Image (cartoon, rainbow over all chains, first blue to last red):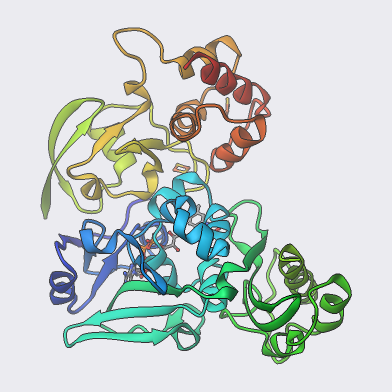
Length: 280
Length: 154
Ligand SMILES: Cc1cc2nc3c(=O)[nH]c(=O)nc-3n(C[C@H](O)[C@H](O)[C@H](O)COP(=O)(O)OP(=O)(O)OC[C@H]3O[C@@H](n4cnc5c(N)ncnc54)[C@H](O)[C@@H]3O)c2cc1C
Ligand code: FES
Ligand code: FES
């Protein structure tokens, strides 16, 4: 399959990439969502701006209170990263479950969240991690809380002419105590349901919970009723079974040929419990 | 518009002019006649097109040739050195790791990525590493044995 013709420009810096982002141009990260789309001729941008050679987007930095991850960092880099394994284990767990090794060697964190596929893993994980997204445009940079980033089906807070530069994960007790579990579509390995949880504990009592779900609705979300129900509970099987009720409350659950609405609903319930039990 | 790229393929420096939309797998097969890299699904699912870019296994049906400018590429043709089979190739030969052979180049290149990262993988780890490579003939058992053979030899 051959895409429609397009121009190609390699950006040496984020600034340069932004200056090239006019008209019908598109950013090219790892290309592992965009190139399949172009080959199927579902999209035909006039120009691709390759940001994969921009050095400043390639690093994971271990700061005092956070870990910042460049938008161009690959899933494989995240899977191997020691500081994330310590401070936010759900990141490594999710990275290792994305696609296959070839996909993980190319696909990037920034590309995945910019794309905002409703079955992608990172949206749920970053939601649970209370991450921040740093975005650059011609006027400077702005930071968006992850709760405000995902807007809908393949839709984000990203505006025209903007590039995601960094994703920042705070070093919190909760992120240190986090887990990701996923029910995979066996061929593509995208999530039919994926659940990330981060729990702040006071001894054996849950002080606060953040839960991210992907694959369930047209956009990733937090089941806040469940997060609230968990507060003050002991982390054990009985309290998890009691608190995890109706994780799809108020959500329009997707249905497709992989999983019907009622099956997905059931899976969502099961996977929230599994994620929590992983932390027992 | 033609774009000029310079890259290393199996140790040889190559310069080419091509359209930006040229897919790396097509470039290798049709411009360089390196037809060992197979195209099975053309949709990044089957792994038959796996090559290494700077030492990492990637699906070349989902990479633009222009993205490979300045990189170092290894295809299945680059595995054997001075006429001697690479231990991975020897493993597939000794353990009967192929039937029709269509998936084999991709299997070998993924195996190479695995053995670089993990020289002594367990059977489970080998099976997991092959999750992006489909074989319609062998049932995978002998492919796993071939990679175990190579791991023991390397
Ligand atoms: C076979 C296969 C299996 C997969 N399995 C999974 C899976 O199990 N789970 C999962 O979550 N994903 C999966 N993916 C998707 C994969 O993770 C992609 O790599 C990812 O979704 C997109 O990242 P990319 O860097 O390749 O982005 P690209 O394809 O380069 O870009 C995607 C979109 O984001 C934009 N973009 C890219 N970078 C930026 C940036 N820094 N700022 C602003 N916009 C940007 C592009 O313009 C484009 O619109 C799979 C993909 C394949 C091919
Ligand atoms: S041809 Fe590239 S993955 Fe199938
Ligand atoms: S040997 Fe025929 S597809 Fe694997």
